[in-house]
Length: 135
Image (cartoon, rainbow, N blue to C red; front, side, top):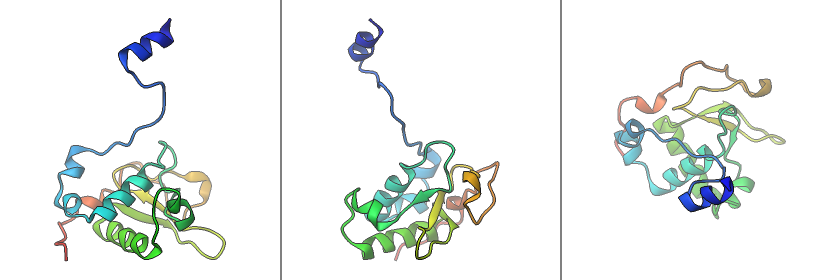
């Protein structure tokens, strides 16, 4: 009976959600992002599950499954998000491991000690810095 009520009310049966605060999406650093940067931000932030901020990847092999077809466009979008403060690098990648990132509107988690940065109790909030004029 409970299952049919859920279907009748149109409620979700599970799954996560992506929290983007109004103050974040109304900030000039957000609304002047390029479309590719907004897409990448959603693709990366969509990996966040509540306790893994800092363990988010933008590896091309992963992003290709999300519709990315150009390493160059992915690289440009990533650079834009880092410059505008929506992402921070939490681990520099190398030959056998990917670079990892954290969104800056949530606290950075410990992630089992695999990060090059310390966990935080408060969000870094780098996106709130002075607005950057788009090129």
